[in-house]
Length: 423
Ligand code: S3P
Image (cartoon, rainbow, N blue to C red; front, side, top):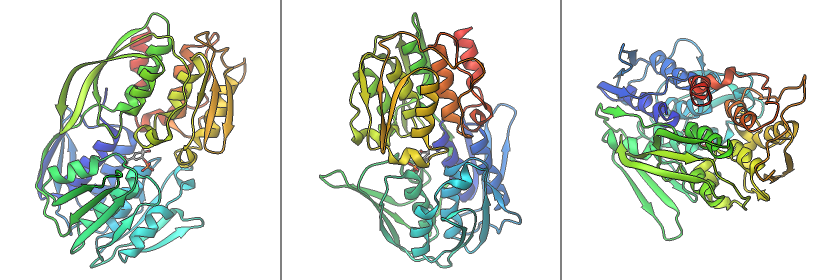
């Protein structure tokens, strides 16, 4: 599996804030991460790719980001946008953020609110959307902020702003979300501590005006990309697939547990540590799946995996019920309605609810496939395109997808790998 998208963004950003050279191997070379790299270059970092695929990042130091001379084009990437809004908010610079049609519909109020409390100033398009301008605070004010939505992007935006803020910035996270920022900030030498209350609430404290030390980072493979191949192997008869280099950080890996609960045969081979994160190879075999009710408590640790879980559910015996998925409506597309429409067109039985879907599976029989002359609509959302490609593998006539270009945002080798394992 190619590198983890979340970790790749953070490696470039923190490398750009450390004085000296950070070297990154296994970086995901998807469009989203390249948007982050371009933005950090525009703010002073020197970022190059060597011929062996290693990336070299010469950082400018916390507090020393330069004023970008043009608007920062974030493409399709919500993670780049929200995390970089945090970085700019804590520096004495201003920046304009623009993005594609999908990104320009996504809510930025969730980061504007806490970043305004530290003293940054925002001029956003109606509804708190892109294009928007951030004027950073100098000096910023340290805040204590309790996250109203379970979002690693909001948490990370505040922590990145806190790096250049005098004093202690505190984020309280009632529901744990992916912790790559915390792990990597510590790795770069920031003073960060995490206190976990008996009810699971996490309080994260970061000491500001941090000095980051450059690092050598190996990015583990992306579990969110592995997810498509895991489901493909489970639903295509005769499959026996080893997916190498899958990151299994507990804040990311819930999909594999849910699929096992549905009867999926997923075995971990060679569990090891890569770049401070747990990693294993996964052996996945075709399995008779059974529908389940998915506990909403696991949503944050598989938030990007629901589109492909819905595909597994469409092939399972019986009913799968999901809830607590409101956040899916504000991802690259409204993933609840996009998957409802796409799977229905492909012949699955799906009911949409306010915060989830209910799917009555085929019990292993292939889906019909998209009728002649029709295509599922991806709405500029890579995960809809990939999930429906996987559904196509378990259909009689195949699934036609209207636009596969968004796949390059997170998984440029998806089609080549799919060809390799099905060919
Ligand atoms: C991400 C956090 C998640 C996830 C996104 C990547 C990150 O978003 O959906 O793909 O790298 O921090 P939210 O924070 O909006 O849940």
